[in-house]
Structure formats: structure tokens, C-alpha cells
Length: 318
Ligand code: TXA
Ligand code: MG
Image (cartoon, rainbow, N blue to C red; front, side, top):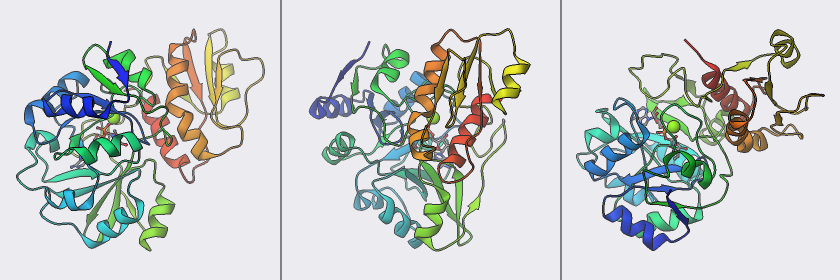
């Protein structure tokens, strides 16, 4: 098992040696390595069993540092990221030669973000290289929102986990690109489309990849998935359809009477509270005695859109 702690100097030392450290962010925990060291980046792919076509996000702490690794920083993206960072937004920028092919799966753009977590921000400030960090889970499984989640699955593969408590946002960052003078959202996430449109004074285009054989990588139809079958729809109907089985229920606002194994995302009906709880509850249900899991969609606004996106991918089967 990995050691858990809050020793930034130790984390820095390991990263400088090319080792991996799990880091807390406001979205989910990341599995971090030196983004300028191709061997360290390769070991991230190995630990996660992640296919090489799925590019990594690079994390740092300032716009000045970002300018060192990109050839161009479109004004609209700079304005948006300045307003949001540190925060749950990743932007795609044209990379220069310091960012190796392995980081971006050969794409000409690199995904970059400044995450909002005090421990990780201090760590990043102390480093003169950025950190490549995908979510710290085996490829395809539910993302971790607590240090213990990382330790359960990757603890034998990494020396240290910076323990920053529970992630406040709970789902991954929203990924945005600037193309043809327009903002495009490539992955729904912890920054809602409504907030992006308000801050940028423009409508965004959604470009969510639905392919299961992606040429725009990463947005696989099946992702964030529990091991148990997950069905989504009307909870009462699903309960009837699966009578006789041990069922775990994930509801949005209202618990279901007479069900032993269940979680409710937000009794207040707050999409932010729901997103904070989503992955932890899915994990807990996956580890419960239930044979199958059922869930309902949440209202399709604010972070509810990203939650529904994750539920759809978690439930997808070929
Ligand atoms: O909130 C987050 O973004 C978390 C924390 C740790 O920062 N990270 C995260 O990383 O979710 P990961 O690897 O699980 O998801 C990154 C996704 C990739 O699957 C890919 O779809 C997309 O980001 N991505 C990265 N670079 C890209 C690029 N150059 N072009 C298109 N998509 C890219
Ligand atoms: Mg991930």
C-alpha cells in the first residue's frame, strides 16, 4: 500500500526522481508524474493500464508557466481561464516541443489546467515542471474522490498519496477548445456550460464524442463504470423489472422506501452536492452486496448535465 500524508517536500522529491504521486484536486484525485519526463509519463499509462491513444491533462499553477509550453494562447481561452482558474476547467492549447508526443497521444494540442486545491497548488508552485495527471483509477473504472479510493486500487503501484481529503467538486474538469472562433466543450464536467457561457458572453458548441472507437480520444461511450451492471431510468419501473434480485439504488433527491442498499445524491436537490457525492456513492454501491445497480437521471441543468453524462457512460454496455 502507498503511504498517505501531506508532506509536499516528499512529494516533490519523488516527482523529481521520476516517480508517481497521487494528488488531490477539487475535481478528482490525479495520478501525477513529471510531464516533461517521457519515462515518468509512460509509467502513468502503465499503472492505469490506459491505452496510449488517450491523452493526459497537464497541471500547473500559473499562466506564465503555461506560456513556456505552448505556441499560442487564444485570447478567448485566456480570458475564460483567468476568470475560472484555479478551477475545474481544462483548455486545449497548441503545444511546443517541450511537451512530448506521449503526453498528448500525438495530438498537436495539450490539455492544461490549474487545479484548485491548496496542497496541490503548493506542490505545483514548488516545481519547475508541470504534472501530467489523469484521474487516479484503473482505466475505465469510477474516478477516485478520496485518498483511500486511490490506495485501494493503485496503492501497490505508487509510493505516496498526498491526502487532501474529499474532492469538493467530485467530477472531472470541463474540457474546452477554441476552434473556428468558437468555444467548443469536448467533455462536460465540474464547470457548467451555463457558467462558461456567462463568463465568455457567447454560446458554446457541444462536441461530446460518442464513439466507442475514438479518434478524438478519451470520450469513450463506456467509462467511469462500476463492475456491477448499472441500469438507468425510472426507479419504480426498474425495481419491478428486476424483482427478485438484490438491487442497489442511486436516487437523486428522494430515497426509495423499503430498499436496504441505497444512496441519495442530494436530499436538497442541489446538483453541486450531487456531483460531490456521485463517484463515492457509485463506488460504495459497487462494493455492497447488491447484484445490480439502478439509478435515475438527475435534472438536466447546471452540473446535472455532467452527472447524467457520467451515468450514461457508467451504464453503457456494448
Ligand atoms: O478533473 C480532471 O480533469 C482530472 C484531474 C486529475 O485534473 N483529470 C482527468 O484526467 O480527468 P483523465 O485522464 O481522466 O481525462 C483526461 C481526458 C482524456 O481522456 C481526453 O479525453 C482529454 O482529457 N484530453 C486530454 N488532452 C486532450 C487533447 N489534447 N485533445 C482532446 N482531448 C484531450
Ligand atoms: Mg479519467
